[in-house]
Amino acid sequence: MAFTTDIAAKLTRDASSLPQSGLGADRFRRFLDADLAAVHLFSRSARPRATRLLAIAISKLGNGWIYLLLFPALFFGLGWRGWPVVLIAAANAALLHVLYPIIKRRFLRKRPFHVDARLPSLLKTLDEHSFPSGHAMTLTGVLAPMVLAWPAMTVSAAVLVLSMAWSRIATAHHYPSDVVAGIALGAAISWPLSRYALTFFF
Image 1 (spheres, rainbow, N blue to C red):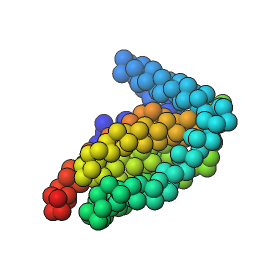
Image 2 (cartoon, rainbow, N blue to C red; image 1 turned 120 degrees about the vertical axis):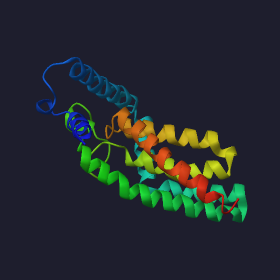
Image 3 (cartoon, helix red, strand yellow; image 1 turned 45 degrees about the vertical axis):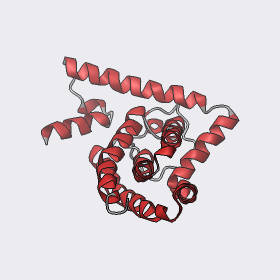
């Protein structure tokens, strides 16, 4: 519990919550600085109008609209066998939507554009906290049963996840560590659940 509390304090990027000396503290400060520097790099990629609009569009699709595109594609590939996959994907999304706000309230990490005023937020946020990325987490959870049931879409799923990861950092809403954690948590939770659930249908 103490370890979790310490990490949560560090991820807030509040200097007063970090130990003032020690090898571990220095390494964590360097990690936080590198995380923020990466956001600046991604943010620059969204400065041209075309890529800025793309980043905004992908992020907005992650609010739920992307699933209206994914499910018809799934039915195209699997026919009516896609129904169980849709139900499992929806269950994963519901579970992860319950979990990630709890995790965010635990860590209370400020979004990059709140930490550094030089970073422009390209659109409104759904909540105030950064860690982990709910968009990356839920997209991964929805894609897990789809990939298991229809392996041919593995590459497309990877492209979707990477595109969402880029957009969330480019809009200055998340750090790279946020999206990596979101993807990892989404996969760790939804992959075994999806594999188990699919055994009843396939």
